[in-house]
Length: 391
Image (cartoon, rainbow, N blue to C red; front, side):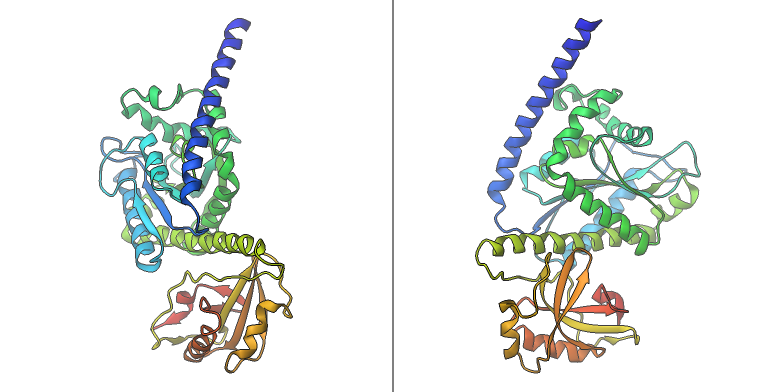
């Protein structure tokens, strides 16, 4: 018995080493093509498809729900973020093997991989959204979700050759694959947290939190990657919501807002690190991820104010810094204000409740800070600009 156990451990160790080597090869090609520090490519992966229906509700199939959400998400990004390339693993009802979904992301040097799913449970009262990153399962519930999603590989021919001996019924198999994604675990968990926050605040959805488990679709991705369970098709209320156009759009909008926030966060940090290596007195860039509405739009309530953001930084910058010396050349300039937003410090010029006035300020500011843009505050907190304006 001991001999067999030792042999089994050696096989696991060998598979792990080979997997890491293959992953490092993928990493090297990824880094070679990434020199901008920006999030330029997202892969949207609607789960299941074709002969694989996924989870079954009383009237709908998971594969149809997640395709609807995925296509809506892609449209939102294409229409609002012109600097981002959207790639789908599938945009119709076809079956794509799990390993090919990861390969699509790797071939295109994607910056983020988002796999969209819907959950199921024998307990029809189960409900809520949850977002997973690749990792060791912390409880049996997480393990069961991963086993259910990974069972898709049984639709593939010779699946054992693509997944290096993975057994969808073996808990030990998850140990190997969960270790692989540790390179991007922090970023994956960051994005997962943002998604869950937006599900709760923007879509008024019940959230089950950020979790980790061994998902094969995330295993070989050479970038931050998450798997989103949008709700339970086995719950009658959630099935009705997820199968509706309105429900799918709310889910898609929440993920879109999360991507905008994550993109700004990553690009701000990347720019800070790049500029820090160039000069002792750091220079900072801003990233406008919200399209500015038409000029005929006006503010809608007294608790709303508008400002022009010129700089964002993960660290505090003295208002006497050389970074802000050029502000004195701006027509109508009075002072720079600092706003703490999450883990980021944002520096702004102007403060008015009149949207047309702030557009004029922005025009002057952009002559000195070309990447400046308008932001909105509600009760002193930054909120999406489009959310506080009406036509």
